[in-house]
Length: 99
Length: 99
Length: 99
Length: 99
Image (cartoon, rainbow over all chains, first blue to last red; front, side, top):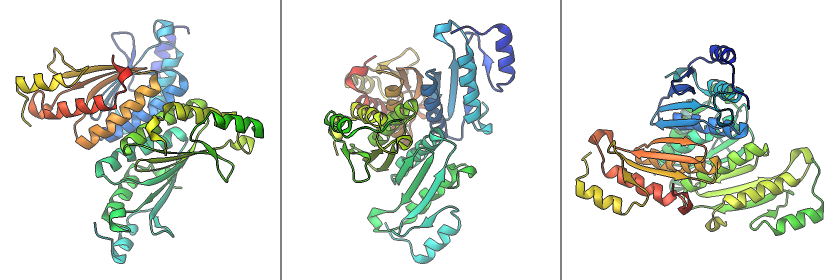
Protein backbone atom coordinates (compact mmCIF):
# COMPACT_ATOMS: atom_id res chain seq x y z
CA UNK A 1 0.00 0.00 0.00
CA UNK A 2 1.51 3.32 -1.12
CA UNK A 3 1.47 6.48 0.97
CA UNK A 4 -0.48 9.42 -0.39
CA UNK A 5 1.58 12.24 -1.78
CA UNK A 6 1.07 15.64 -0.19
CA UNK A 7 -0.89 16.71 -3.25
CA UNK A 8 -3.15 13.65 -3.13
CA UNK A 9 -3.82 14.25 0.57
CA UNK A 10 -4.60 17.93 0.06
CA UNK A 11 -6.94 17.24 -2.81
CA UNK A 12 -8.54 14.35 -0.93
CA UNK A 13 -9.25 16.48 2.14
CA UNK A 14 -10.91 19.13 -0.01
CA UNK A 15 -13.74 16.75 -0.76
CA UNK A 16 -13.99 15.47 2.83
CA UNK A 17 -15.73 18.09 4.96
CA UNK A 18 -15.14 17.60 8.68
CA UNK A 19 -11.86 15.71 8.23
CA UNK A 20 -8.44 17.07 9.10
CA UNK A 21 -4.95 15.65 9.20
CA UNK A 22 -4.10 15.68 12.91
CA UNK A 23 -0.76 16.18 14.63
CA UNK A 24 -0.10 12.43 14.54
CA UNK A 25 -0.48 12.44 10.77
CA UNK A 26 -3.82 10.63 10.88
CA UNK A 27 -7.11 11.61 9.28
CA UNK A 28 -9.46 12.67 12.05
CA UNK A 29 -13.12 13.54 12.33
CA UNK A 30 -15.25 14.20 15.39
CA UNK A 31 -19.00 13.58 15.23
CA UNK A 32 -21.84 14.28 17.60
CA UNK A 33 -25.20 12.52 17.55
CA UNK A 34 -28.57 12.98 19.21
CA UNK A 35 -27.80 10.34 21.83
CA UNK A 36 -25.89 7.09 22.45
CA UNK A 37 -28.35 5.05 20.41
CA UNK A 38 -27.75 7.11 17.28
CA UNK A 39 -23.99 7.18 17.85
CA UNK A 40 -23.76 3.41 18.21
CA UNK A 41 -26.06 2.72 15.24
CA UNK A 42 -23.70 4.89 13.19
CA UNK A 43 -20.73 2.94 14.52
CA UNK A 44 -22.39 -0.32 13.50
CA UNK A 45 -22.90 1.03 9.98
CA UNK A 46 -19.22 2.02 9.78
CA UNK A 47 -18.14 -1.30 11.32
CA UNK A 48 -19.88 -3.17 8.49
CA UNK A 49 -18.23 -0.94 5.88
CA UNK A 50 -14.80 -1.18 7.52
CA UNK A 51 -14.95 -4.97 7.79
CA UNK A 52 -15.94 -5.24 4.14
CA UNK A 53 -13.09 -2.90 3.11
CA UNK A 54 -10.76 -4.76 5.47
CA UNK A 55 -9.65 -1.37 6.72
CA UNK A 56 -10.52 -0.49 10.30
CA UNK A 57 -10.71 2.81 12.16
CA UNK A 58 -9.15 3.77 15.46
CA UNK A 59 -12.17 5.19 17.17
CA UNK A 60 -13.33 6.49 20.49
CA UNK A 61 -16.87 6.86 21.76
CA UNK A 62 -18.44 8.35 24.82
CA UNK A 63 -22.22 8.75 24.92
CA UNK A 64 -23.21 10.72 21.80
CA UNK A 65 -19.71 11.58 20.61
CA UNK A 66 -17.47 9.62 18.26
CA UNK A 67 -13.90 10.46 17.27
CA UNK A 68 -12.50 8.58 14.30
CA UNK A 69 -8.83 8.41 13.34
CA UNK A 70 -7.61 6.74 10.18
CA UNK A 71 -4.18 5.59 9.12
CA UNK A 72 -2.76 2.69 7.13
CA UNK A 73 -0.20 0.67 9.04
CA UNK A 74 1.03 -1.13 5.91
CA UNK A 75 1.77 2.23 4.30
CA UNK A 76 3.38 3.74 7.40
CA UNK A 77 1.04 6.69 6.95
CA UNK A 78 -2.03 7.69 4.97
CA UNK A 79 -3.19 5.82 1.90
CA UNK A 80 -6.11 5.77 -0.51
CA UNK A 81 -7.88 3.39 1.83
CA UNK A 82 -8.09 6.13 4.48
CA UNK A 83 -9.64 8.52 1.99
CA UNK A 84 -12.12 5.81 0.96
CA UNK A 85 -13.16 5.05 4.53
CA UNK A 86 -13.41 8.77 5.36
CA UNK A 87 -15.66 9.25 2.35
CA UNK A 88 -17.84 6.35 3.50
CA UNK A 89 -18.13 7.93 6.97
CA UNK A 90 -19.28 11.19 5.39
CA UNK A 91 -21.89 9.40 3.32
CA UNK A 92 -23.33 7.69 6.40
CA UNK A 93 -23.02 10.52 8.93
CA UNK A 94 -26.16 12.61 9.03
CA UNK A 95 -25.53 16.30 8.28
CA UNK A 96 -26.40 17.29 11.84
CA UNK A 97 -23.61 15.13 13.25
CA UNK A 98 -20.87 17.59 12.45
CA UNK A 99 -18.77 17.79 15.62
CA UNK B 1 -50.48 -4.37 30.68
CA UNK B 2 -53.89 -3.41 29.28
CA UNK B 3 -54.99 -4.09 25.72
CA UNK B 4 -55.68 -1.09 23.54
CA UNK B 5 -59.33 -0.41 22.85
CA UNK B 6 -60.34 -0.37 19.21
CA UNK B 7 -60.57 3.43 19.37
CA UNK B 8 -57.08 3.75 20.85
CA UNK B 9 -55.66 1.48 18.17
CA UNK B 10 -57.39 3.36 15.37
CA UNK B 11 -56.23 6.71 16.65
CA UNK B 12 -52.72 5.37 17.28
CA UNK B 13 -52.39 4.05 13.73
CA UNK B 14 -53.44 7.39 12.31
CA UNK B 15 -50.21 8.93 13.57
CA UNK B 16 -48.06 5.96 12.51
CA UNK B 17 -47.56 6.07 8.75
CA UNK B 18 -46.42 2.75 7.32
CA UNK B 19 -47.92 0.65 10.11
CA UNK B 20 -50.93 -1.59 9.78
CA UNK B 21 -52.68 -4.08 12.02
CA UNK B 22 -52.04 -7.40 10.27
CA UNK B 23 -54.21 -10.50 10.10
CA UNK B 24 -52.56 -11.89 13.23
CA UNK B 25 -53.61 -8.77 15.14
CA UNK B 26 -50.04 -7.45 15.33
CA UNK B 27 -48.73 -4.05 14.32
CA UNK B 28 -46.63 -4.52 11.19
CA UNK B 29 -44.34 -2.36 9.10
CA UNK B 30 -42.07 -3.30 6.22
CA UNK B 31 -39.00 -1.19 5.49
CA UNK B 32 -36.48 -1.16 2.68
CA UNK B 33 -32.99 0.31 2.90
CA UNK B 34 -30.18 1.12 0.49
CA UNK B 35 -28.33 -2.09 1.36
CA UNK B 36 -27.66 -4.59 4.15
CA UNK B 37 -25.36 -2.20 5.99
CA UNK B 38 -28.08 0.44 6.30
CA UNK B 39 -30.70 -2.15 7.24
CA UNK B 40 -28.58 -3.63 10.01
CA UNK B 41 -27.50 -0.23 11.36
CA UNK B 42 -31.20 0.60 11.62
CA UNK B 43 -31.82 -2.70 13.42
CA UNK B 44 -29.06 -1.89 15.89
CA UNK B 45 -30.67 1.48 16.60
CA UNK B 46 -34.03 -0.22 17.23
CA UNK B 47 -32.38 -2.97 19.29
CA UNK B 48 -30.98 -0.33 21.66
CA UNK B 49 -34.39 1.35 21.95
CA UNK B 50 -36.22 -1.95 22.41
CA UNK B 51 -33.85 -3.15 25.11
CA UNK B 52 -34.21 0.12 26.97
CA UNK B 53 -38.02 -0.05 26.71
CA UNK B 54 -37.88 -3.74 27.66
CA UNK B 55 -40.23 -4.36 24.75
CA UNK B 56 -38.86 -6.34 21.84
CA UNK B 57 -39.98 -6.71 18.23
CA UNK B 58 -40.56 -9.86 16.23
CA UNK B 59 -38.54 -9.02 13.18
CA UNK B 60 -37.29 -10.50 9.99
CA UNK B 61 -34.44 -9.32 7.79
CA UNK B 62 -33.10 -10.34 4.45
CA UNK B 63 -30.50 -8.13 2.79
CA UNK B 64 -31.97 -4.60 2.65
CA UNK B 65 -35.47 -5.47 3.84
CA UNK B 66 -36.80 -5.53 7.39
CA UNK B 67 -40.27 -6.58 8.51
CA UNK B 68 -41.25 -5.67 12.05
CA UNK B 69 -44.19 -7.07 13.96
CA UNK B 70 -45.23 -5.84 17.38
CA UNK B 71 -47.46 -7.33 20.01
CA UNK B 72 -47.54 -7.46 23.80
CA UNK B 73 -47.62 -10.99 25.19
CA UNK B 74 -48.57 -9.80 28.70
CA UNK B 75 -51.61 -8.06 27.26
CA UNK B 76 -52.62 -10.91 24.98
CA UNK B 77 -52.72 -8.38 22.14
CA UNK B 78 -51.71 -4.81 21.41
CA UNK B 79 -50.82 -2.32 24.11
CA UNK B 80 -49.44 1.19 24.46
CA UNK B 81 -45.96 -0.28 24.38
CA UNK B 82 -46.48 -1.38 20.79
CA UNK B 83 -47.57 2.10 19.77
CA UNK B 84 -44.52 3.55 21.56
CA UNK B 85 -42.08 1.18 19.83
CA UNK B 86 -43.76 1.74 16.46
CA UNK B 87 -43.40 5.51 16.96
CA UNK B 88 -39.70 5.05 17.79
CA UNK B 89 -39.23 3.02 14.60
CA UNK B 90 -40.81 5.81 12.58
CA UNK B 91 -38.53 8.38 14.18
CA UNK B 92 -35.41 6.37 13.32
CA UNK B 93 -36.40 5.07 9.88
CA UNK B 94 -35.24 7.40 7.15
CA UNK B 95 -38.10 8.69 4.97
CA UNK B 96 -36.80 6.76 1.95
CA UNK B 97 -37.14 3.46 3.80
CA UNK B 98 -40.87 3.18 3.29
CA UNK B 99 -41.43 -0.39 2.13
CA UNK C 1 -22.81 -20.02 -8.46
CA UNK C 2 -23.40 -23.78 -8.76
CA UNK C 3 -25.99 -25.69 -6.76
CA UNK C 4 -24.72 -28.28 -4.34
CA UNK C 5 -25.19 -31.88 -5.42
CA UNK C 6 -27.20 -34.05 -3.06
CA UNK C 7 -23.98 -35.74 -1.97
CA UNK C 8 -22.27 -32.41 -1.24
CA UNK C 9 -25.27 -31.25 0.80
CA UNK C 10 -25.44 -34.48 2.77
CA UNK C 11 -21.75 -34.43 3.56
CA UNK C 12 -21.88 -30.71 4.36
CA UNK C 13 -24.72 -31.14 6.84
CA UNK C 14 -22.83 -33.91 8.63
CA UNK C 15 -20.28 -31.39 9.83
CA UNK C 16 -22.91 -28.75 10.69
CA UNK C 17 -24.63 -29.73 13.93
CA UNK C 18 -27.92 -27.90 14.44
CA UNK C 19 -28.55 -27.30 10.74
CA UNK C 20 -31.19 -29.04 8.66
CA UNK C 21 -32.47 -28.68 5.14
CA UNK C 22 -36.03 -27.40 5.65
CA UNK C 23 -39.14 -28.01 3.57
CA UNK C 24 -38.39 -24.93 1.45
CA UNK C 25 -35.00 -26.39 0.54
CA UNK C 26 -33.10 -23.89 2.68
CA UNK C 27 -30.52 -24.55 5.36
CA UNK C 28 -32.08 -23.72 8.71
CA UNK C 29 -30.91 -23.42 12.27
CA UNK C 30 -32.71 -22.18 15.35
CA UNK C 31 -30.72 -20.73 18.24
CA UNK C 32 -31.63 -19.63 21.73
CA UNK C 33 -29.60 -17.23 23.86
CA UNK C 34 -29.61 -16.07 27.46
CA UNK C 35 -31.50 -12.90 26.59
CA UNK C 36 -32.06 -10.31 23.85
CA UNK C 37 -28.66 -8.70 24.44
CA UNK C 38 -26.81 -11.93 23.74
CA UNK C 39 -29.01 -12.75 20.74
CA UNK C 40 -28.43 -9.36 19.14
CA UNK C 41 -24.69 -9.37 19.83
CA UNK C 42 -24.57 -12.74 18.05
CA UNK C 43 -26.55 -11.25 15.15
CA UNK C 44 -24.07 -8.39 14.90
CA UNK C 45 -21.20 -10.87 14.74
CA UNK C 46 -22.96 -12.77 11.93
CA UNK C 47 -23.89 -9.52 10.16
CA UNK C 48 -20.20 -8.59 9.95
CA UNK C 49 -19.31 -12.03 8.60
CA UNK C 50 -22.18 -12.05 6.12
CA UNK C 51 -21.36 -8.59 4.80
CA UNK C 52 -17.73 -9.59 4.33
CA UNK C 53 -18.76 -12.79 2.52
CA UNK C 54 -21.35 -10.83 0.55
CA UNK C 55 -23.80 -13.57 1.41
CA UNK C 56 -26.68 -12.64 3.68
CA UNK C 57 -29.04 -14.72 5.79
CA UNK C 58 -32.81 -14.62 5.93
CA UNK C 59 -33.27 -14.38 9.65
CA UNK C 60 -35.91 -13.85 12.25
CA UNK C 61 -35.48 -12.73 15.85
CA UNK C 62 -37.78 -12.39 18.78
CA UNK C 63 -36.26 -11.69 22.19
CA UNK C 64 -33.66 -14.44 22.83
CA UNK C 65 -34.46 -16.58 19.80
CA UNK C 66 -32.95 -16.42 16.33
CA UNK C 67 -33.95 -18.50 13.30
CA UNK C 68 -31.56 -18.43 10.36
CA UNK C 69 -32.36 -19.63 6.85
CA UNK C 70 -29.78 -19.79 4.10
CA UNK C 71 -30.13 -20.10 0.37
CA UNK C 72 -28.32 -18.75 -2.68
CA UNK C 73 -30.58 -16.86 -5.06
CA UNK C 74 -28.00 -16.89 -7.85
CA UNK C 75 -27.86 -20.68 -7.66
CA UNK C 76 -31.61 -21.17 -7.41
CA UNK C 77 -30.94 -23.32 -4.34
CA UNK C 78 -28.13 -24.19 -1.97
CA UNK C 79 -24.49 -23.50 -2.76
CA UNK C 80 -21.10 -23.69 -1.08
CA UNK C 81 -21.69 -20.19 0.23
CA UNK C 82 -24.56 -21.45 2.38
CA UNK C 83 -22.36 -24.16 3.88
CA UNK C 84 -19.64 -21.57 4.54
CA UNK C 85 -22.02 -19.16 6.29
CA UNK C 86 -23.59 -22.01 8.28
CA UNK C 87 -20.11 -23.07 9.42
CA UNK C 88 -19.36 -19.49 10.47
CA UNK C 89 -22.59 -19.39 12.50
CA UNK C 90 -21.58 -22.59 14.29
CA UNK C 91 -18.17 -21.16 15.10
CA UNK C 92 -19.69 -18.03 16.65
CA UNK C 93 -22.72 -19.56 18.36
CA UNK C 94 -21.94 -20.51 21.94
CA UNK C 95 -22.52 -24.22 22.66
CA UNK C 96 -25.42 -23.41 24.98
CA UNK C 97 -27.32 -21.68 22.18
CA UNK C 98 -28.53 -24.88 20.59
CA UNK C 99 -32.23 -24.28 19.96
CA UNK D 1 -24.91 9.52 42.81
CA UNK D 2 -22.40 9.02 45.65
CA UNK D 3 -18.69 8.43 45.12
CA UNK D 4 -17.31 5.11 46.24
CA UNK D 5 -15.24 5.18 49.40
CA UNK D 6 -11.69 3.92 49.09
CA UNK D 7 -12.71 0.74 50.88
CA UNK D 8 -15.66 0.15 48.53
CA UNK D 9 -13.41 0.66 45.51
CA UNK D 10 -10.75 -1.69 46.82
CA UNK D 11 -13.24 -4.40 47.63
CA UNK D 12 -15.00 -3.89 44.30
CA UNK D 13 -11.80 -4.27 42.30
CA UNK D 14 -10.99 -7.50 44.10
CA UNK D 15 -13.92 -9.17 42.39
CA UNK D 16 -13.22 -7.57 39.00
CA UNK D 17 -10.27 -9.34 37.38
CA UNK D 18 -8.70 -7.32 34.59
CA UNK D 19 -9.86 -3.95 35.92
CA UNK D 20 -7.61 -1.32 37.48
CA UNK D 21 -8.08 2.22 38.69
CA UNK D 22 -6.01 4.24 36.20
CA UNK D 23 -4.05 7.45 36.74
CA UNK D 24 -7.11 9.52 35.80
CA UNK D 25 -9.08 7.85 38.58
CA UNK D 26 -11.20 5.83 36.14
CA UNK D 27 -11.84 2.09 36.07
CA UNK D 28 -10.01 0.68 33.08
CA UNK D 29 -9.83 -2.66 31.31
CA UNK D 30 -8.16 -3.61 28.06
CA UNK D 31 -9.47 -6.55 26.06
CA UNK D 32 -8.23 -8.38 23.00
CA UNK D 33 -10.39 -10.49 20.69
CA UNK D 34 -9.82 -12.92 17.84
CA UNK D 35 -10.57 -10.24 15.26
CA UNK D 36 -12.60 -7.09 14.58
CA UNK D 37 -15.83 -9.03 14.20
CA UNK D 38 -15.56 -10.50 17.68
CA UNK D 39 -14.49 -7.16 19.17
CA UNK D 40 -17.43 -5.29 17.67
CA UNK D 41 -19.96 -8.00 18.58
CA UNK D 42 -18.71 -7.66 22.16
CA UNK D 43 -19.10 -3.88 21.93
CA UNK D 44 -22.68 -4.30 20.73
CA UNK D 45 -23.43 -6.53 23.69
CA UNK D 46 -22.00 -3.92 26.07
CA UNK D 47 -23.78 -1.10 24.22
CA UNK D 48 -27.13 -2.80 24.90
CA UNK D 49 -26.27 -3.26 28.57
CA UNK D 50 -24.96 0.29 28.95
CA UNK D 51 -28.03 1.82 27.32
CA UNK D 52 -30.30 -0.20 29.58
CA UNK D 53 -28.30 0.86 32.67
CA UNK D 54 -28.21 4.42 31.35
CA UNK D 55 -24.52 4.40 32.15
CA UNK D 56 -22.12 4.58 29.21
CA UNK D 57 -18.45 3.73 28.84
CA UNK D 58 -15.66 5.83 27.39
CA UNK D 59 -14.20 3.32 25.02
CA UNK D 60 -11.66 3.00 22.28
CA UNK D 61 -11.38 0.32 19.62
CA UNK D 62 -8.88 -0.51 16.96
CA UNK D 63 -9.24 -3.80 15.11
CA UNK D 64 -9.35 -6.57 17.74
CA UNK D 65 -8.55 -4.40 20.76
CA UNK D 66 -10.96 -2.57 23.05
CA UNK D 67 -10.07 -0.27 25.93
CA UNK D 68 -12.89 0.62 28.30
CA UNK D 69 -12.80 3.42 30.88
CA UNK D 70 -15.57 4.01 33.38
CA UNK D 71 -16.40 6.96 35.54
CA UNK D 72 -19.57 8.66 36.79
CA UNK D 73 -19.79 12.31 35.87
CA UNK D 74 -22.65 12.95 38.31
CA UNK D 75 -20.50 11.64 41.14
CA UNK D 76 -17.35 13.46 40.09
CA UNK D 77 -15.56 10.13 40.29
CA UNK D 78 -16.32 6.44 40.63
CA UNK D 79 -19.68 5.14 41.77
CA UNK D 80 -21.52 1.86 42.17
CA UNK D 81 -22.66 2.19 38.57
CA UNK D 82 -19.06 1.82 37.38
CA UNK D 83 -18.62 -1.35 39.39
CA UNK D 84 -21.89 -2.69 37.98
CA UNK D 85 -20.92 -1.97 34.36
CA UNK D 86 -17.44 -3.41 34.91
CA UNK D 87 -19.01 -6.58 36.31
CA UNK D 88 -21.27 -6.80 33.25
CA UNK D 89 -18.25 -6.47 30.96
CA UNK D 90 -16.53 -9.32 32.78
CA UNK D 91 -19.61 -11.50 32.43
CA UNK D 92 -19.76 -10.92 28.67
CA UNK D 93 -16.05 -10.92 27.84
CA UNK D 94 -14.85 -14.38 26.89
CA UNK D 95 -12.03 -15.65 29.14
CA UNK D 96 -9.54 -15.52 26.26
CA UNK D 97 -10.10 -11.79 25.81
CA UNK D 98 -7.88 -10.77 28.71
CA UNK D 99 -5.71 -7.98 27.33
